[in-house]
Every structure is written in structure tokens, then in C-alpha cells.
Image (cartoon, rainbow, N blue to C red; front, side, top):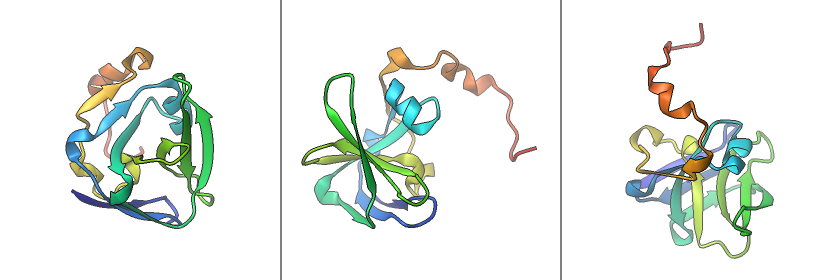
Length: 133
């Protein structure tokens, strides 16, 4: 599936070819901190199917596994665009919230569930409103 996306301010834009069957949710504590939310939703894309316009700012973190992971942010608005290996990445995990076609991309798997916040599974029962009251 061809997708398009970018940061909030438009400084970074991209095109990618992804497989919707690989959309996942990551509950790791790093993703919780980096998103400021309960989890991150990602779409893996191979290097040869990813074209980015603009220069992201890169922050490198060391994962629990010891792997060094690059986090690419817009230097203007701070939107996190992707995560990848720090050196010679072959796959970029696009943040689904940055994809224009995100309504078509339901997650198919969850990882790092041991770190999931206990209330996440109960969100369906929490009342909601269409807009901010």
C-alpha cells in the first residue's frame, strides 16, 4: 500500500510502500516516554520503499536489548516520524499518526505487552465525546 505522511508543521514529508498486515502497537516504556502516551503505533517500511523530504533531527537511544535505536523528529515542530537502527537502517518504523491514510491502518499485533499500562485494555468502556467539550 502506498502511503504519504509527514510532521505536524509540514517541514518533513514522505512517501512509502508498506504492508498493512505489519502494523503494530508497541507498549515499551521507551515508546511511552517518547510519545507522551500509553503506546506507539508503527508501520515498518523497507529502506528502498521509503522516500523522505527534509532533514529530521536524530536522537539515538539504547533499547533494553542493548540495540541503539535512532528516533527521527522534525526539528521545527518535534513530531516523531520514525524509529530505526542507529547505523545503516534497513527498516524504518513509521509512526502511524504521521501517515495521511492512517484510518485504513488498524494494528495487527502488539509488542512489549508486559509494559502495557493496566488501563489500556479498558479504554473501550471509557465514555467519549466527538470534540473537546
